[in-house]
Length: 87
Image (cartoon, rainbow, N blue to C red; front, side, top):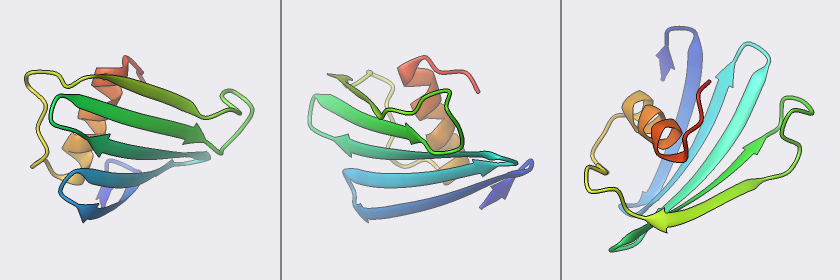
């Protein structure tokens, strides 16, 4: 998918598992998301530079408004919002 200059590739091998690859100009980041009944786990890895050379992993209670039926671009925005990351 290409939304406003970004390229988002999503693979959803299971309703509770998603992998997002995001590219915007020279920025490339990967998100691995797993969803439990009451929790969410997100691992992020920025491969585009030295700003975040290590993976970041978050595991927390699933937000009450979490949705797993969103399109790729909306799902990515939801991920960024839930981990408090602004791009």
